[in-house]
Amino acid sequence: MDFEIYTLILFFVCGIAAGFIDSIAGGGGLLTVPALLSAGIPPAYALATNKLQSSFGSFSASFYFLRHGYIDLKLIRNGIIFTFIGSACGTLAVQQIDPSVLKQAIPFMLIGFALYFIFSPRIGDEDRQQQINFFLFSLIFGGGIGFYDGFFGPGTGSFFAIAFVAMAGFNLSKATAYSKLLNFTSNIAALIFFMLGGKILWQVGIVMGAGQFVGARLGSRMVIKKGSKIIRPLLVTMSLIMSARLLWQQYMS
Image (tube, rainbow, N blue to C red; front, side):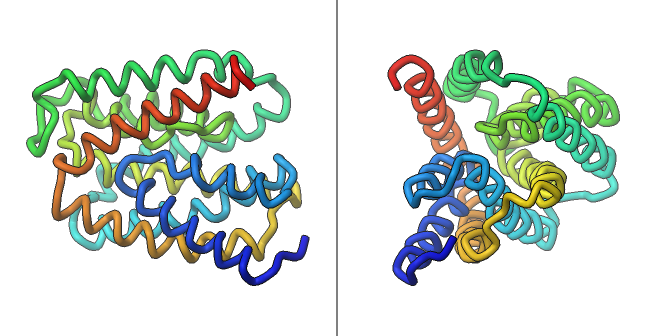
């Protein structure tokens, strides 16, 4: 598919906005997937291309957090391995299984996460007591959420963040940093299998990816500067918006 220059410029701007939001709270796909579909791109190609462009943003955010000392690669290495495996399995499974059951359950899970962040006064800039050893955390949540991202996807960043906060005891800034690294891992795993399927529009993906890279860098700086003051309200907002969108698709469209 060929696109005019002004359409590519709009894709780039959309990528910046999505990268900024995604690096802080997740949910950038709420902007990018509709933008791809509105340009007349078939759904399968839109989802595959979205994985390509979102990989730029999650890489940009991960690299920024890593460079500023927010991520310990030794601590998270098992999480990376299990997330990659989970995402690869999810990408293969979605080609064989109807994801409609997940579509019905996810909106209510996201609403629950939003309520958790609203009413839990302990979530902020301080670490809390770890509830589970990190290998088991990596196996259960890295593998499980990675599988979900490859299988379905919406809210993956929120799911990783809540897992790091509730089970690993991380503060919100730290949880956001580690969430971006695992999100990047799951994106890459899914992207590999989409590449094998030949459904990626490289021109669009790279243009949007460039915007994602810029937006994610800006968002990552905001996380470091503002911490929970900006992360908490955005997590709540994006979780509720994603819930509303998924419920609308199920019951109103």
